[in-house]
Image (cartoon, rainbow, N blue to C red; front, side):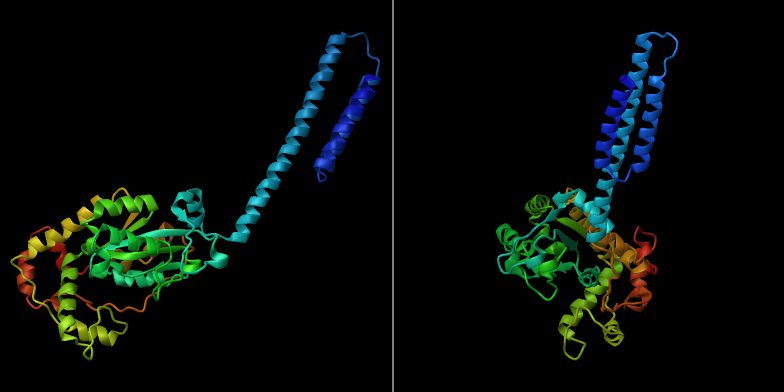
Length: 371
């Protein structure tokens, strides 16, 4: 009779288990077979044995059955939960880097612009960034690459206008407009931007007000991209040639800092500047110190460091940038054409003096071709 009651109890458990897990018929059948076997064992009348031993066996068997049923239920629940999580990923199809950013949601924002409505993109998170660089370091080319991404809005060299950097208040007010998506230019993709930012030169109020700006970046969780040039001599050539063209306007009376054809690049590259070899070493050292100070001032921010030469040699660096910004990977393109190609001896009028000045110094490597 006790065996029959045990069978009824276990059967009730298995019926409940079937309701919870209708796909586990085979396991249920196995449990029932075990219970039938157990029932047969109980109805047998063995020789005299201790009642305590029999009760212990019954108790142990009940515990084994309970653990087995619980483990099966737990496995089914965890499988269903994992399936739902995988389905969510398939629907959203986020990039690997965006998944990592969602683990640290403090990097993401949900701007509410006052000048327009983000409509269906209101629930799309946005990452804030800033490109910190120097003139003639490839920042214009780099920004066009970023803006070729469908989800990026890099708003250009905003602080080239003096009124926007008169003091800290005007700087912060301008930054607020940019990161609230209320800044409009040809690069803006405001409604569905996944990353928005600007390009900022070190000599445009950034270093003078570095303390307040660094605090703002940390408070707003702005990700910083440092873009520098390793070969400072090439940068110097580019600066001097660009300054000359501001007045000479070699392209049909028009000054262009960047060009989009090989013909235009060839015209601009014909001008060969004369470099002051007397102050050259000090000038190169000043350039280095300025970049070093910028890294020191904004070291507390989330940042990455890029070099123009690395981007030229290895385009996989652009994938690192997209991952840093939490973007889905895309092939980035730019229409800009490099102006000064080939060895520097072809672009410096007093090459012999420059070569003699840098030979045997820490800057000697600048004389060689680097890409």
